[in-house]
Length: 406
Ligand code: NAD
Image (cartoon, rainbow, N blue to C red):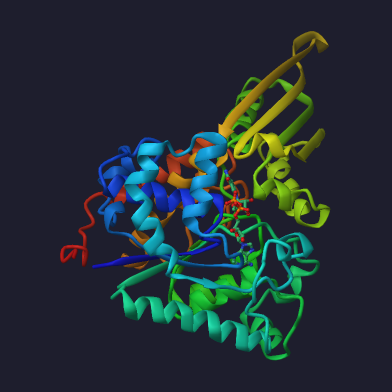
C-alpha cells in the first residue's frame, strides 16, 4: 500500500521542510520529535509509515526544493548540514515531481513569486482538468494507492463572497461560468475531492471551507480538514485563554505582535494576503472567552529574521477587587520546523481516516488548526481530548491494506 503526498507549494519552507523531515526519518538521521502521531495514544493507530510516503507537488516558482532547504540551512541552521547532506539526493529526485501550478486570484504578492509560466491559460474548467491530470499522472507513475493533497502554498487574500458557493451546485455552476473569483486553493481542492483524494488545508486560504466543497467531500465520503496550521503564537493563545477563562480572570486587551522574515512573511506583508491570516490568528480568543475585548494581531515583515519567527504578546487582564495585571510572553520558533511535523501527522491521520471510511470534516484534527473546520472547539486541551478519544476508539482498527507495503 503506497500513500502519496501531493504538496501544493512543495518548494516553499513548510513543504520543503516536511519532505526533508520525512526523508531524514527514512534515512535514519532524524527522530520523530515534534510529531503528534509518534506519541501515545495516537501512535497506536495503524497509520502509514513516514518512511514510505511518496512526495510530489505543485508550485509556481522555479527555485528547487534543494535550494529552499539550502537557503534555510544557511540563514537559520534548519536543517543542520549533516541532515541536509543525508537527504540531498532525495530532494533532487522529488523536485522532478513538482509541476507548475496556478496562481489564480492569489494576489500580486504571490504572482510575483513566479518567474515562469503558470497554468492560467483557458477556463477555470481547463485549469481544474490540468490539475486533475497532474494528480492522476503521479498516482499512475508511482503506483499510489491513496493520494493526500496538502495545501502549503502562500496565503491568498480571503474571498469576498464565499457564501455564494455554499452548495456544490453553485460551485460547479461557477466553474462552468468561468467565474474569475474562484481562488487557486479552491481549484486544487475541487480537483482532489472530485477524484476521491483527501485534502488538508494547512493555510488560511479558502480551500474546502466553502460549503460547496464540503458538500462534495460528504457526497464522495472523502476526508478533508483545515485551516491554517496552529504552530506558534496561536497555539499558545489556545492553551492560555482557557486558563484565564477557568480562573474567571477578565481579559481587557490581548495584543499579539508577530515578526517574520521568510517568504511567507513577504507575502503577508501585502495587506490583501495578510487579511486572512489576521482573521484566523485573532478569531479564537472570543470563541474561547465568550466576550469581546480589545484583540489586536499585527504581522510585520522583518527580512533579517528569516524563518525564525518572533511573537510578542501582551495580555492585560483584571482580577478580584478590579485589580489589573499583565502577562507578556515572547515566542521564538523556527516556523518550518514547527509546521513540518504537523504536515506529516495530518497526512498520516487523514490517510487513516480515508482508509476507514471517515469522510467529511475531521473533528479529531481540530488541535492542528487555528480555524478548525466543522468544529467549534478552540480550547487546546479539549481539542487534544477529542484526538485522544478518537485514537483510543480506533486503536484496534487493523491496517486493512497497509500490510503489503513495498
Ligand atoms: P513559503 O512562502 O516559504 O512557501 C509557499 C510556497 O507556495 C512557495 O514556494 C510559493 O511559490 C508556493 N505557491 C504560492 N502560491 C501557489 C499556488 N497558487 N500554487 C502552488 N504553489 C504556490 O511559505 P511557508 O512558510 O512554507 O508557508 C506556507 C503556507 O503555510 C502559508 O500559507 C502559511 O501561512 C501557512 N502556514 C505556515 C505556518 C508555519 O510556517 N509555521 C503555520 C501555519 C500556516
